[in-house]
Length: 358
View 1 (cartoon, rainbow, N blue to C red):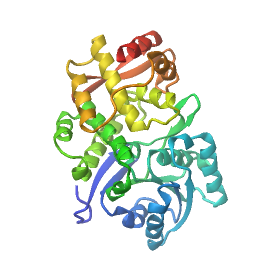
View 2 (view 1 turned 135 degrees about the vertical axis):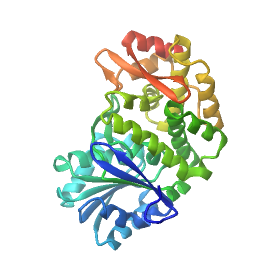
View 3 (view 1 turned 90 degrees about the vertical axis):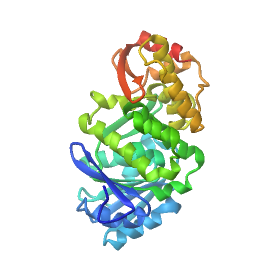
């Protein structure tokens, strides 16, 4: 829906344990102060960003906060998934403490998924939890990572192994920020967008196969957020339906780990979707023709479809995935385009699944 009579901003509500709006549109960085002030009583804001995003967008965000009569302090971490560690998380906590951020103040995450994950986890744990706002600047973060309340850091054993569920007070997606993204970074968001269509909305998937994402970016982000919001509202803490959002992620996370996080998240998920669908079709738990659909989608958006690692390497990495529960792990398969289900495998079943994927 349109908000406040603006032709450039739309709003999607996320009805989780606490309801909050996701604002989508161009030029919203300059309205952040006004929008954020409507959703938190904080007067002081710790803006956490990275050293790539900082010179591009932090000054505008801080000016917007100050124009709304709010105080902002700024901290930039090194960019990249390799920095999503307990050490960097500790540095953020140290900054919050040194800046005398209190329980009545608020953290603002300005950047992509890595910044959002770390800043969100810091907000969830600093002084047992303070308010948190997401201002994503990447297609992937706006369409997926900033919505739903998952926050985390990585460990050497695997991705996102330490974290918390901590819902933001609001999410503000200025889609103009995507104009500075390298093509590969934009395509990371394209992979998660295709995932949403494949698991939950056949008509959206077909739209993506016919239209141009960039030319329809506000519409595409909005539909991504609507799909994720619907799933989160039903299963906030990933005990049931929310697991379908992990399509492509079990083997995708394994690929990231095997690469030392040199393969980006979206590219790894694209490969992971291909592998999971190939295995599911081969083992009789996936819908006929789904592999062809996934391959066509990845090829349309110049996303990778082949894995450089062996079945043994992927299996070893996947056994440490956070989706493992005891001696079992859930993988997501497509029954048909627009409908996904989880399948529970034991460790031998995971080995068989991984071998069938290649």
